[in-house]
Image (cartoon, rainbow, N blue to C red; front, top):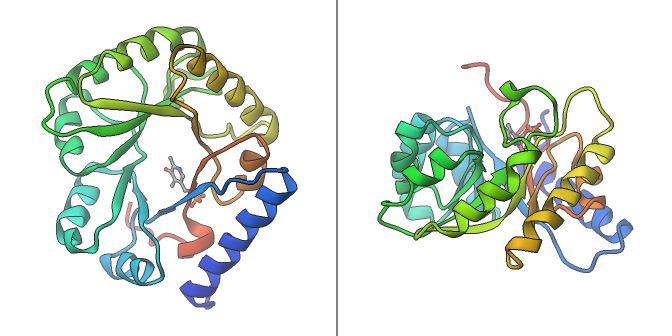
Length: 223
Ligand SMILES: *Cc1c(COP(=O)(O)O)cnc(C)c1O
């Protein structure tokens, strides 16, 4: 925990490179550093270390940080559940939405004033409360997203269930990615992999990793 931020970041970057090589891949996944609950100071330090992609999951906190750190030229990834009535506000500062999971939410984004990217979150559990579209409803959501004037569909996103081998869960996600690509050939991205399961996610084709505590240290207990 007292290891400097730069060393933790380097350790994760080399862990990602190792896992990517082990998977026989020649691309390099995008590392999104998840900074939720941490102060602006940490994000400034990350930016100074070359980080460009940061992830947040609570609207008010993310909005404030994006405003206050506007001069840093970061890409803001919004990872959390999005309330339909807040969606237009989130879309003002978020460059990428990772948890688009229902048609109503896509509809609410039809009239935003800038172009943003999105991932469709797929629920890998049987529990609807965990967020994400049910796999049986995936195609309908893809089709509606492709009609959106403002959203560019990048691919699928998921969080591994707590009670399952993450590799097996991410393997299912890869199958959902194939279904999405059958309708949207450009939507090749897979947002998966956190501190404890990024190697498994990389092995199953993740292109966007969302890694927090391994880099930032434990989150302050403010919420
Ligand atoms: C917090 C969070 C992460 C990062 O989790 P760590 O275990 O700290 O790496 C990734 N994805 C989402 C959706 C999150 O909310």
